[in-house]
Image 1 (tube, one colour):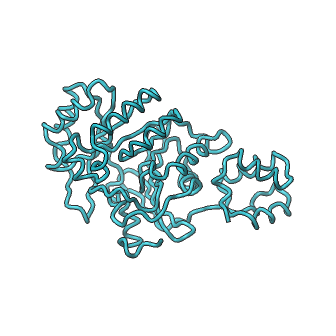
Image 2: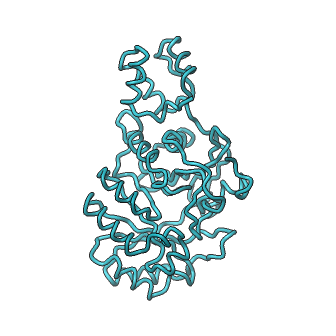
Image 3: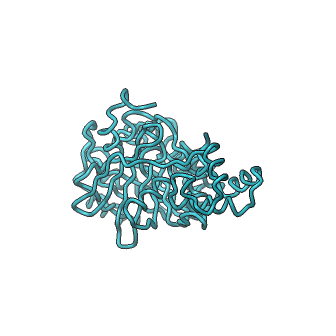
Length: 345
């Protein structure tokens, strides 16, 4: 059966019209779903016979908390959600002075193969539905009792590899009768799928596009990120410029600092030259150690930052949260479900 929560309000209106129901029924159900109802029986303002009919036709997605880790250092909460098919994904609640941010997953696993990421070690199992992405925001709010004001799509999976479901999620989470989280409070991270970056630009969304760059040259980036072997840094940067020209939205470049791999002065200079005149922002990320990876966190983050700033690049260093829990994306899921051969498909 189809999950009703993945429908837009307009689509839901068509469904209820086909059932001979008035338009306001769709609005009622939409509101219930976006408040976290897990069954049609909870929808007390609907007639009982309609509730029974809906339950026979559709299901309502809702994840279960498989594991939950709370950092004693900063209060960061990491959830491992078990989905209806037994697969698990991670969500992280991060608390800042300006509000709460949730980092959500877009796929079960990932096929991009980035060398520093635990999410990709078992490969991609499947895409998440729009409802399953939305549920991460919704049920994190409900479990924590705290409102979420910002979303980053930087969890397990490559969002642009699940383009249609991600776009539908963005429509749902932005809806004024739903969670109503503004696009300017949403950041979407991509490893650099050029055709999908161009496609996203066509929609003119006011979200922040974060490009996982991690190296300014093809040799290093291809070593770290297999996607670069078919793309290349120059073509990626051209796509980023097209995106900026089309949307007017400044791009943020993510750069994981890896010891003796991408953290030299020469690479800082090369990165500065690559971004000169673009008005872009660089977010340096202290690497989270992944047991299965030989890559180590850089000891030169501040030196690299100063080198970029001296060359006119706007730089921030991401605050490291959840250091005493499974901080690296994909680690908690991997501990729970085991390596690739044991993952559920």
